[in-house]
Length: 178
Image (cartoon, rainbow, N blue to C red):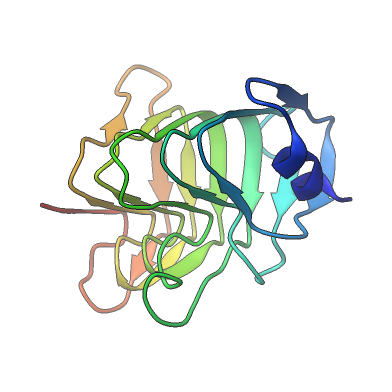
């Protein structure tokens, strides 16, 4: 299913509603100066699968990514900077980008920094998200945050972290670097 193509071509402010099912993610989506909203049928019900071949999104200046009720699995990046950051989502060196994730499962994603999410100088927000079995070969098995303010909502149900690993710096769940 070409979900990524639909997302990349969508107009600013549009919402894509995804039914239950597993969707193969065909290519990385670079987002600049637009709002993208993806709404699924629930964690574990709507599964976006990158097949261990790519990340889902790179967020640039002015991008707002809103994720609701879905799973992002098997995102993977490797190589040299900046291609080694954020297995599922990379928020790159921007002050005006936003990630708002609610009821999202990040599972089996991998990178050198930020197995699931890499955030630099941004302010991502996570509410009722599950970070499961993500890995980083350096730091931030689930999330690597550099600068900015990363918010993990503490209201119930809170975010959960399970089985995330980081090989070198032993920060399996989250790593915050100023």
